[in-house]
Image 1 (cartoon, rainbow, N blue to C red):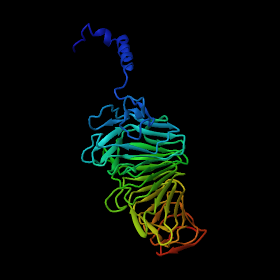
Image 2 (cartoon, helix red, strand yellow):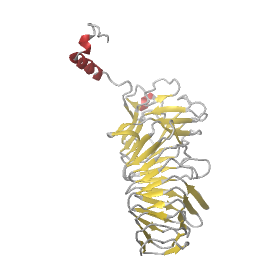
Image 3 (cartoon, rainbow, N blue to C red):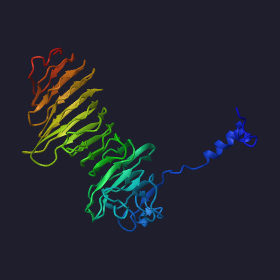
Image 4 (tube, helix red, strand yellow):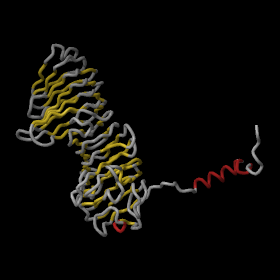
Length: 393
């Protein structure tokens, strides 16, 4: 075995190693996140450097060569009583080509103290583009993509309501980012959500509402740990046929709600196929008058806590995937005005089923769950001789 050179010995000895460690610790990370605050001093153009503080560069790294661009780890912050209602990212100026990425950021921290809502979108009239979010530490939470707090709501727009006519997608730059929305606030993403890496997903945190109204293509898992995740597009979980493809799984924690919203007019039948892990609420918001929403959930539904399925308005929910109660209680509250609430995938586990409110719930398949069955409102209709084979009354 060769011995180290005498010249290197001091560096390789414990004191030398300590010195090297101290020197390494003093070197700043190459891509440390920088907060750039919007002031809107000269209009609503993202790439105008005088709209930012510090006003030497704008937030984020552009795909093309743009004077004054920042870093792909920048945080765009909006605070105080800023009056802006529309910010345009010109994807042509940002160097987007063929619908490719135009601007890359770490995160958006939206914390206005007035109530004027803000929309951020593509202001180009010629080029589509993509805003990619790589995640950053915001409010001490790592991997945050967007945080909405303060007194106003935020929209990431597919088409900017100002001068823009072209689209802007939103790309997940990390596989497990976070959308954090405070109580009383709403983050609406009408941009189509895609992924930079396969099986990328996100977690929705905070007691506010995240509403997805784009036709998304990301394929990773989705988790709602608090508040409401509102689905306002039948292709929000991906796929070219409304609601038929899905991310790899959806988890709705206790106290959180997954809300499936009626979109447009008339009679709508939408199918959602992800496996659902549920300890919170699954709700539908049907239309009024002749507008109805009939949802089919074809993935397996696994309860990890007491849960609620609640079709309301002119809405109904048909579960064709298997329901695994575990040792938990499922309450099926049929507030909807149409009678197509049906369970056909069977129910297993040692938990219980409670049918509440008016209207009818149909059990049209054999079940093997062993807990109690309680009817406190409406009708429980049995369409299979073994629908209640092992349950107690």
